[in-house]
Structures are given as structure tokens and as C-alpha cells.
Length: 149
Image (cartoon, rainbow, N blue to C red):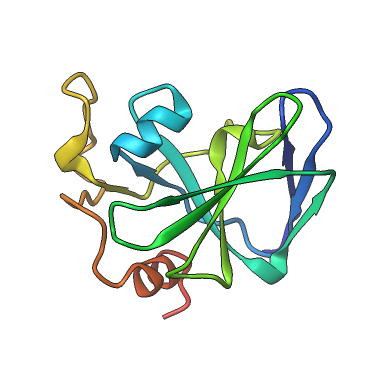
């Protein structure tokens, strides 16, 4: 089923659209996601780059990820809202930050990563797969989450 999801920053200066199938959601418990979300974890939606469209000016900050790649983090220069990431490991993908969607009521993680770094107060559903660290084949894991083989 194809649908269009929309989201953006807090001030409205940057908007985006995701076309195609609704992407899966996973929770990352690494320290970087905790910092960028100012919470216990970050919610991420892996999206094919060709299905992602941005309107408005974004700023970019780059960091080394826990998995060893480089992550470009895109945010609104006006309000500072983090919107999406692009990893050097999967440059054809965009990882949208779940809280930036207009409709967040449907977000349910289908997996957790970096649970070795999760906050002790976070309780995980034992029915949802949880990995101690990042998958070794991040690109393959994200394809698997999307049902792409």
C-alpha cells in the first residue's frame, strides 16, 4: 500500500515528504541518539533516498557513528529540530527521525539496536527483536526491515 507521509521542523521552515510504503520504525539506544533526542532513545525510519523530498533550507552536521561510519545529520537552522540522517554506510538511504513526522500515533518500533547502552528505566517488549549493538550489515538489516530481501 502506497501512501505519503509528511513531517517537518518545529518552526515550519523545513518540510518533507516520504512517498511509497510506510517505512518500518526502529529504536536506537546509542548515546548519540539519546543526546539528539534529549531522551532515552531515538526513533528512526529508514527510507530510500528517491522516496524522500525536502522543502526548505537545512543545515548539516557530521559525526562518526558508533558503527564506524560517518553520519550527516540534517536539521533546521532556525529552530534546531533534527530531521534526518544520511550514513556513509548507506548513502542511498535517509533515516528520518520519527518525532518529526506530523502524525506520530502509528510509530511502533519493530526492532531495537544498541540496547547495551539503553537507559535502565527503559523497558523493552520481549516480543520485539533487540540487538546489543548495531547490526554488522546495517544496509542489509535496513533492507530486511523494509521487506526488500
